[in-house]
Each structure stands twice: as C-alpha cells, then as structure tokens.
Image (cartoon, rainbow, N blue to C red; front, side, top):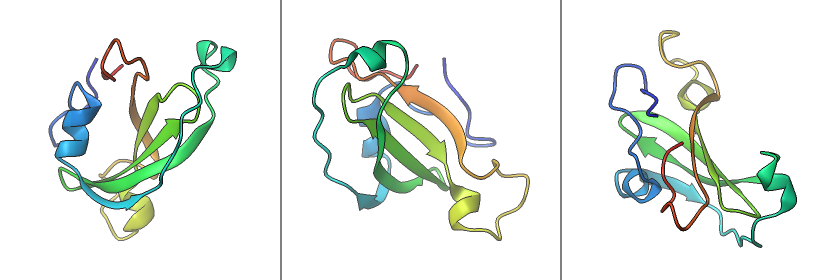
Length: 108
C-alpha cells in the first residue's frame, strides 16, 4: 500500500529510500530494546525520531522504542501555519514502515 502526499509522489516502499531523499533538520538518537508483547497488539511506544523535508512536505517520523516500527506524519501545516488549507491537515498520518528486519522496514 502506498499513500500519496497530495499532489506529490507516494512514500517510497522502503524506509532507507525515504531517508535518502529527505533533508533532515532534527534527529534524536534512539535505542530500540526489541519487540514487546504490546507491539504485537499495535500498541507501540513511539518517540519522536526525525523531522525533515521530503518532496516539499515537512515530515515527522516517530520510532517504536521496542520494535523499531516507524510512523510517518505530514506536519507541514503545523510547522508552517501559512500553508494553504488544501495541503494535508496538521499532523496527518501518512503511513508506517515495519520494524521487522526481515522485511527491511517496508511501507505498510
């Protein structure tokens, strides 16, 4: 599944491709502890990880402190309030990348 960034290209299928095309403006050092039972129930302990620009949109990535699943949100209107209302709503969820090393952090 791919989710479009309204009027721009879709998120890449792999996290490494997103990071390669992103201009990172903020990065937090996080240490994953390994998958927890709560992760299997989609109850992730997310922490802000990376903020940056991808395809003219400000994105915020949050990583699960246990299984390394990554949530991607468009925060363009939050960071630049004068952006047109036609742009994604503040803090809109765009998608997830799996934390599974076997899957290579693919877009879900």
